[in-house]
Amino acid sequence: MHVAPAGTAVLPQVTTPLEASQAELFEFVHSDPLLSASFVANIALAGLTILLIVYLGRHLTDPRTKLIAVSVMLISVVSISSYTGLASGLTLSFLEMPAGHAMAGEEVLAMWGRYLTWTFSTPFILIALGMIAGSNLTKILTSVAFTIAMCVTGLAAAFTTSSYLMRWWWFVISSLFFLVIVYIILVEWTADAKNAGTIGLFNTLKILTVVSWFGYPILWALGVEGFALLDVAITSWGYSFLDIISKYVVTLLIMLWLANEPSEVTAGADYGASLPGFAPADD
Image (tube, rainbow, N blue to C red; front, side, top):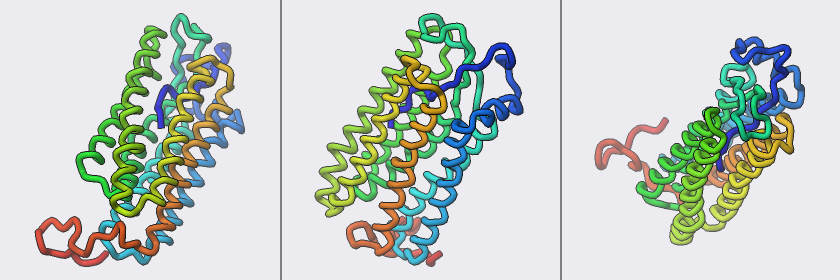
């Protein structure tokens, strides 16, 4: 998933000041039913996904399988929290676009709360994918580090209003970090999954993940930060739709597969024990 600046809405300058209160932000969002629904739908889907994970994982016993299940659960835990922040107006701000931008001088609604979603949820997506591929800790931590860097530089692009060129420079940096992650998934982890015997599921997961993540920069280019061809509600729904695929659909596929605890991902009762040779009690 590429994290270039999230979609924004043009702020009616005659009614709302740049320094808006949370109440004004809340009213602004929910005055647009389509924009509001793009947040609320994800809150509902994240909650439903958490319940499905609990149900499908209720009989899991292997600690490595449980760790993968916990990783995918945390994706939805982060999402339900961050989308609530967006829906409440807590993680929204009004920004004035810099000279050179298609909407230079206009105040827009920046949904920077999406970066909280991506910063804290994409590491768990990658942890789950890396473990299913049977990859080593070095590759998994590398992917996590680069996805955090990708999200942070994307946030910098969203908040940079001093120069339109600098917004794009942050975008380029974020894109380079994104390509590192794509390489790990498509090359390194594909090879690892073949050796681990999980290539069947992994191929499906990598296609859903990589294709949906490439959709984010496309939406950015078409949205307000780019060519302003799409309005904010459509752009927001685009991001939400990509989140649904890369998070909830991927999670469901993983949990349906994990429910039977396939031997390719199990590791024995002492996996992850803090004391060598000591198997902790079952939860």
